[in-house]
Amino acid sequence: MATRVIVLNGGSSSGKSGIVRCLQAVLPQPWLALGVDTLVDALPPSAGIQVAGDGTVSVGPQFRQLQEAWRAGVAAMALAGAHVVIDDVFLGGAHSQGEWRAALAGLEVLWVGVRCDRAVAAGREIARGDRERGMAESQADLVHRGVVYDVEVDTTHTEALQCARTIAGQLRS
Image: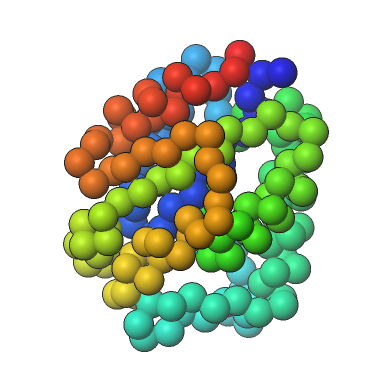
């Protein structure tokens, strides 16, 4: 079975979005890029996601309900024939991966861990200017706890294009 879905998991500012853009450039067929940031941007302010002053993210039941619907929608696109790259942050570690596994049941999925040295990610976070300071550092290890990957890449010293090529080399056609 050919890979239909690539799930990238990594902390804030770890380099996932850059890898996604490079994957879209190097893969022979078109892949839709869907990220958790798109979901968050689509939410109303009352949706139950809060970022504390130290960058810690907490979510409530409203967010979880909408996130579950979003995952089902992403899975439906892949089941309908689209190739999909998901850019996510598994705040619940292995539990978050389990929720994605359930949503993507029946699809060939490549699970990718995107790691980055916490200090480097924190520097990127400051340079971006669109994140609460502390998110990168608080998420650097948290998002990988108990998660099982098919491949891992580290953007600390490796460019996004090389990471994308490594990931592309793991796809089943």
